[in-house]
Length: 562
Image 1 (cartoon, rainbow, N blue to C red):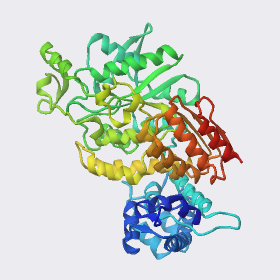
Image 2: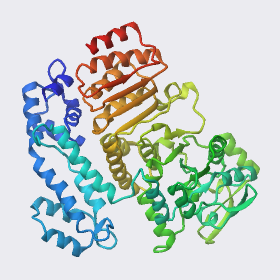
Image 3: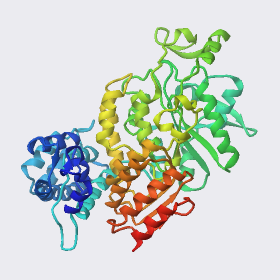
Image 4: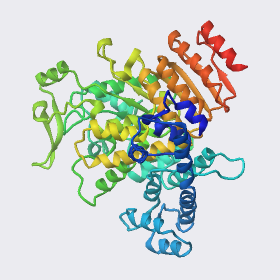
């Protein structure tokens, strides 16, 4: 606690706005609301002196160990009664589980609040969510020689793993194939998309794509990849690269009426097709998932609902890539399409059939990509992979004068956003066609963040601009089991380098590799790392070759090595 105080303190103590960060470094997980309440209880100070800080942290670290240990043990207990490993407990199984244990009043109340699924069963995913939503997962010292942070990490990992076991694994290709089959989500062949470009046709709905075939390499094949083919890929007997497209819908009736997105997808997947001896399969929601209308109780509706509940799998799974399209169709292309009289087949509710319609009859949506709720979520999920280069923007970059924060110096690498920051940003900016989707997106982002980040041991980050280096310093305390990190091609100033290295100093990273081509950024980071190394006791291996280290940086490292 004293070391953390020294780390975060300024002239008069730890600033109030840094309390939450300090708690997370010590292995706790308070929400922003909880931190605000803690500060109120402390009398609303602008800073916290060492005596009050020490007393507060001891209190918080000691109050909830038994409570959380009971939760972890109880998750394991419940899983024993899940006959058939279906990820849920029937009322009879739950009753049997309750009778077989001594439940605290608090846990009984918690169980009563957990939503049941459509069969009236207690869903273990929802139960894990309930446990994960507790404002504080704080722990007292465990067995002799075990630190509080290690006990906290093990308990959180146990909860996350229980959640993972009840859902589709985000690393296993067979689990991904099972999801596609269970939800009847279909991938589309990239070569078919190229055929659409050549014939100047827009993307079809899933309903129409299902029965369509095309000539590919001299053979007539279905437009959509079969589930058997995906299973062969998952088993390792067929080579394929799976790409999920993150994009906005440009009209209510059709996402890409001018074929602008389609052209970008074909351009980019064509590069992969030329470079790799593998099929290229694409997830594009309009073609891959059943679209409106979907009758209640129909296969289409059931398939759609399952897909939406697990949409994160397409963007966060380690076996997929994400291709992001942020720009909307340029005005000149939109106007040219109108002048050409191009017609777009869309569903006509009054006629109950597809009808070709001109652009002016479609309801246009000009909301920016970064303000669209589902797009925000897809960016977050895609940033949670172990290697962030699996998430790529594929449309043209803006001019230098129009670059946004995430495109500084042409870099567009991303790191995940901590759930509290995501929730705040989401509530302030996200726009939805269906506002009811918001709660699902926030829940999925938090659960997936905890699964990917808590269990991550090796992290490779490429192309981080200044703003993302700052985001990394906020996210790093959540990587409790991280053992190695590789930073390539980034930009940072002195402040960002300092914040990153403050978080790094308190991490468990044992191996750090830094490769950068920007002299100034490297200078700031090397000096900050040298300072951090004085207090980091876990790091054993730092590789900083090809960084153009200055004389001052080399001197600082030499001092740190002593």
